[in-house]
Length: 410
Image 1 (cartoon, rainbow, N blue to C red):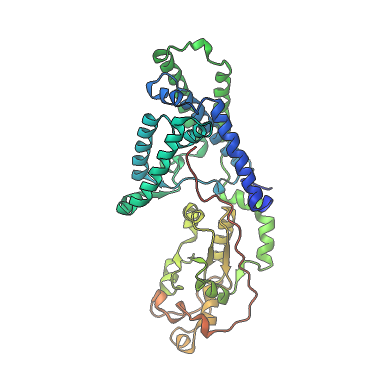
Image 2: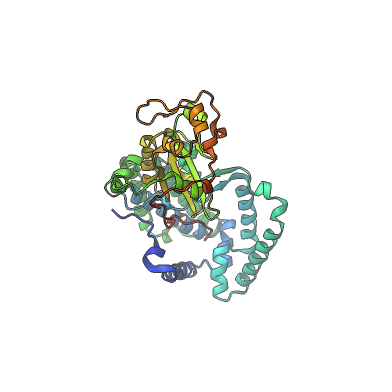
């Protein structure tokens, strides 16, 4: 089953995808304008509790999108791993939010609505946009003076589910209930401070709120797909790649990519800590198989030119790690062919073999006896690619990164 988000660049080409982005932007701006969000008086009135339309509309959009995203993920239509979530920098985010809030109160716009106002030639919107550009310039010129704070308290892709430790459906229901309470409170504030008549409120809003709450309950019942569920959806296609040896990369090819300045290579060694300490390839990260799921969000934030290699003593544990990474939509993942044992067989010289002789072993166990645990200080940990000539079939092909790489405020 195909999943969203759609890879527009693959489907429509570079310029075709830009046309879609333009149309979406025009539609979004049009909706904001007809909703009155290009009017600074209407926007600023929410801070005086007289006109809460902004809160109700924007928060409604957020809650509806949240429910639909996780419902689509639950039934396999959407791959949530490919939905961009802004990385959390806690204290810079809090301070930035306060600064933006003050600017919103003073200027009457947020960045998105100021562009809508400017597009309709409202002078206050134009001046606000000019102020935004000046602020961007000023920030760019001064960020070097506080870059430590700017990059502090990094928490990665940190969601409410991570913070609360609750299932997705439960968190969605709690957010929906919180939103409904806020909408009720906003109406009461409008009536008290703005003199609005409760009878003028649309009657369908009660049914809409109830529908959102019921959808959240359905989410609790269905749950989100597990890694095994995700793998089962792609198993037929990916098993063919395994069987045809299309993802098992020759050690010499991996060595070539390690020294390729155009690529970022991340090597994940999924063996036991004892085996890793006895020998590992230079710069390989020790990542036990059971810990692989915990690093998935961080792997999705790596740049598009990143290639991942997973390795174990032979290939068994590495193949299991590869399946997990494939199920979680991590791109450009390959298996070290033959594992560490094959690497040592190819790059170990006579001196190394004399000090660490081959031993009989079972599947996915070290094939060499290491009297001393030297890790990456063993000779074959950093072979010189210019000293070897191997004939192999190149298999690494950079896959287009489907996940978006940035986000912003509307």
